[in-house]
Image (cartoon, rainbow, N blue to C red):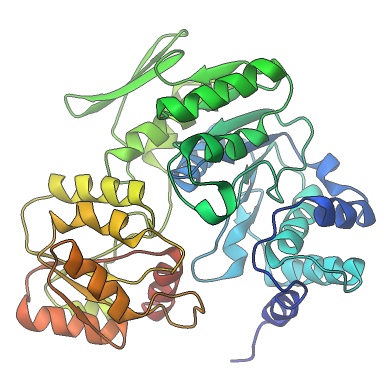
Amino acid sequence: MSTPTSDLILERMMTLHPKVMDLVLDRVWDLLETLGNPQTDLPPVIHLAGTNGKGSTQAMLRAGLEAAGKSVHAYTSPHLARFHERIRLAGKLISEEHLTQVLDECYDANKGAAITYFEITTCAGILAMSRVPADYTLLEVGLGGRLDATNVVDQPALTVITPISIDHEQFLGNTLAKIAFEKAGILKRGVPCVVSPQPDEALDVIEDRARSLGVPLLAHGQHWHICEERGRLVYQDEVGLLDLPLPNLPGAHQIENAGAAIAALRHLNMDETACEAAVMRADWPARMQRLVSGPLVEAAGQAELWLDGGHNAAAGQALGRHLASLPKRSTHLICGMLNTKDISGYLLPLAEQAQSLTAVSIPGEVNTLPAEVTAEAARAVGLGAETADSMLDAIMAITAQNPDGRILICGSLYLAGNVLREND
């Protein structure tokens, strides 16, 4: 099979800046100006930032809006198996032809100037979405918010800040207050913002920024409430109460994400049918996803095979709580992480729920933690750990000893993407 043209252009784009991350907006503004400022032609934008839950909340929002008959663009990152996943135009993933066209156009317009991969590909996504009619644009921040390449829309219809926790400290700061300041950078004067449950330190920063900009907040615990009650999802705000099914995306943390999505839908005057679709129809791979077919599933035999891309301490806590809620079964982790993550903070809550960990290096990823380093970190939090050279080797080693166990592949979205491609 020949290499898609878009892959060749994307490879060229990787060479335009010596750093993967360089958080300034000047380069993005310059390229957008050259392209004719396509960000001003986007359908009404809902801009989402936060440490955890952005993708799931966006998926629920899209499901709800589409159930209400609205056409929706969506931009997200990173992708899992193919870059095309990042750009959804009026409900459909961008075609190879269309992606190649906008990537080429952005590459030519940039004229070889320094620009990061995320910046130029975000400009390509904005360009593509500006040219296709739709009712809404869901724009997910890549990292932070204030200086993120998506933060170029002066007057979005709505902003959303999902739960904030410690992550990406080398770029955003080493305290919740500093990180919240960066996330709150998406707030725009007078534009309402839905706020998910937050630590007090983060919420204080968001509220201060909102006051200075005259931003009406729709904050959890103040303007809306959500909980599980007798196997149902109960949501309440000033409009009234909704009694809904539990989210189809597994995990107790998805209740909070559902709350933010519902609060946004209610603000946009969507009805109960849209809110029910948000919790019942959302599709978001690698978020505690049960793999049910494919060569890796076949290799696992009678063992359950699960996949999750969470990669920070808060994600580890949420994953640990979810594992504790599942029927009792011998649980074994296959873990690969990036060297920029707090591996001990991630693994500690999982150690209480798992019987072993097999560490792998993430294939093709320069910033992967070596498998032995991951294994050492696992042993330090009380998990028996081994290493494996490949995902298939790890699965076969686990099932040889535990043929009826539960296997959870976890630690990184980049690892999850490799798994989905290998299992295709």
